[in-house]
Length: 111
Length: 114
Image (cartoon, one colour):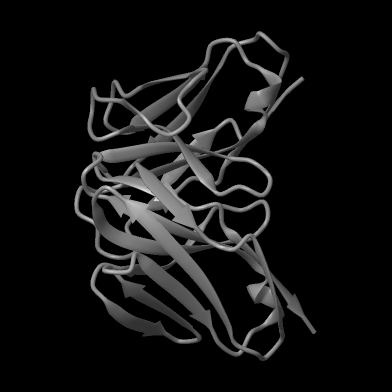
C-alpha cells in the first residue's frame, strides 16, 4: 500500500521562504509530483522528481531523497497569490502505475 | 484544445438516485483516473483505467462503478447516491510514459446528495 504524509497547514509571511515536507511509504516508487491547488480549482502542476536531488524552477524548488522516502517543496519570495493547497503525489510503479495523493498542505500567506 | 472535459459540472441528487459523470479526453491517453476531494483532504483515487476496456479499484471504490468502453471516455456511476458521496470529483488522464507535466485534470464536478 501507500502512505503519504504532509503537514495539514502552514503559515508564512509575504516575501519569506517556506518549506513544505512530504514523506511517503510505497510498495514501488517511480516518481513524485507536487501540485498547487487554489480553492474551487483543479490542481496545477509544479514539479516532478524521479531522481534524487534538487530541481529549481524560478521561485519554486523541489527536492527528493528516495532512500529516505522524503521530498520537500521550497517556495521563495512568497507572494499573496501563493496562498493555496500544495499536494504531494507519488507514482506507484508496482500498482498499475497509480498516482496517489497526500492530503495536501494548506498554506496561508500573511501580509 | 479541449484537454479533459467533465460533465456535468454541478449536480444535486436526492438520496437513492443514480447518475453518471462523464470524463472525455482528446489526447489519446491510455490512463484515466477518477478522484474525489473532500474538505481538508487531498485527492482520493476511486477507480482508474490503464487502457480501453480495463478498469480497476482505487483507494475508495465502494458505491461507485466505472466503464471505459471507448479510449477517450471514462464514466463514473453512482448507482444509489448517498450523502457521503457529496464531494468534488476530478478526472485526470495521462499517457503511458510520464515526463513532467503530462497529467491533465478536468475542471471538477461538484456533486451534492441531499
